[in-house]
Length: 140
Image (tube, rainbow, N blue to C red; front, side, top):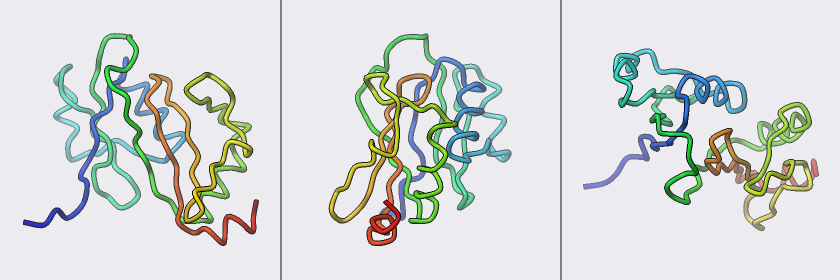
């Protein structure tokens, strides 16, 4: 057997619809119409799809409590999208795990890639990453 790709990641949120709106506004993930029926069940997932048309996240409702696990969901983008995202940070008002504002100074240089870490409104840790190292290095 050979795994083709990661299909989706389960993310716990207090309000699936509010979280879906946030993920669409920040990362461009949209509700997947083919799987909308699953979200009719309050315990079922609300599936979000990325630009490639495949499921990316399954939002599951949970009580408003701290996340039950420590995990990071990383989203890969090309260098141009990474740079464009950085330029919008002031308007998005993203924060890190400590509640500090995420700014261009928050970008992490991994020597082969660049990453930016932030949390969603439910304190799930997210990462935006690119492997277009030289392009981003030149822009920064």
